[in-house]
Image (cartoon, rainbow, N blue to C red):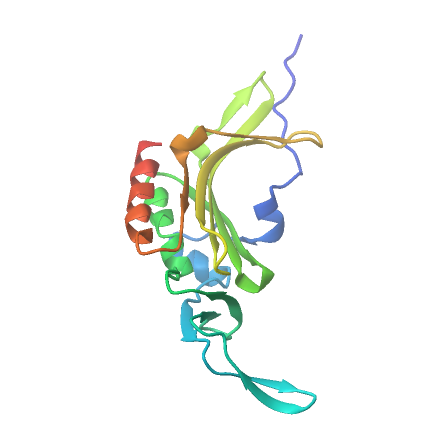
Length: 200
């Protein structure tokens, strides 16, 4: 009896559906440019804000708070306090270049909610496995950053089986998952994430 052919599916991951294909890029800089994520974060005190209303221009303030804005179109992404440390996309996804040197391939990147959340995924082709002779499980590195002042920089390594309508995902537990808050220790935690990646 002939074994069934290895199946591939037309189903896609969320990052592939929502993001830009960056598979032909060879560096993080190129990937961010292609996905229109090569913008940074600027911050301004929320002490004097002018608003145009039906009654004319009024001035208001949010004492003790700062506005977090994109530097390309000045969209305000969030209002934050003194402890919040903004992290640009290039810094949040900096370990992507290290992952690429280890064999990972750029896959998809994009933004949600006007840039309040950004994401980047990379395939791990050498880690692909076949179960039962025909079910393929693809592994990937998934990175995301929150720029709205409410979330964190997230990263994990996951396996995805995209066969039939109920594709499955599996992670590797806390060992290959990281969550970094926007505080003064963010840079140190990013270095720890790079070490995690090298051990993967």
